[in-house]
Image 1 (cartoon, rainbow, N blue to C red):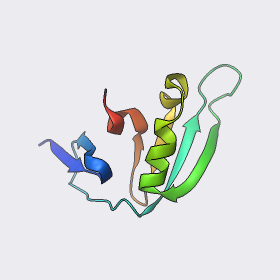
Image 2: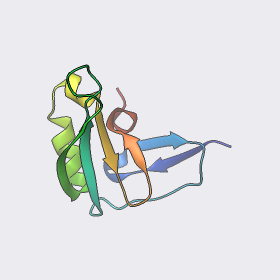
Image 3: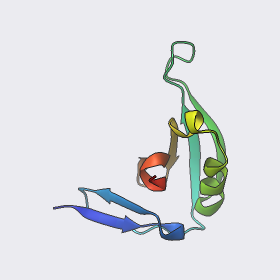
Length: 86
């Protein structure tokens, strides 16, 4: 079965697990996972903030940074680009 969650700002997240709902004011961690040769897979936290603020900060990043951004909620981790879409 395939589910779609609706997040703050109308973003949708398709997935195969149980449906979850998250408020735009829940605190999340926005981090960048550096997977190039120099970073060795290190995660750099950009901000701990309400989801709406973290999404706004992520949207302001250049595309090459956005490709490595992840949002961590109390229950899940999701790639920013999976939320943002094209």
